[in-house]
Length: 147
Image (cartoon, rainbow, N blue to C red):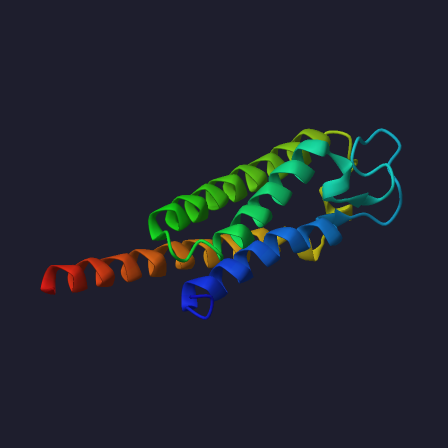
């Protein structure tokens, strides 16, 4: 059913992964000419197609998994795949920032945006959803044994 706790965690995780699309990861005081991502003073998902695809896929899979409540095994697989995509997205974000940091004069100029924290909270929601889906599956299996 949609009102289960794992559905709320899937909604939270997917929503936070998709919310990254609207907020910046980091900002600088002024545009940096030699930078690939801070040339407009803002590093966000729209600066790189790979980040856009991975964050979008992670969020959409988590939200789609909400409606697979009748097939808990598939729902678990989709939740863990969404979490793996989220970890990949965070890794790519850190990698791209690290590669671009060579173009920055000083890292003290960079201020973290809200999207630097949203994916981590989204991953926590996805892992909690996976855990509660597993508990639900165990409960159903134990009830089937009693019949």
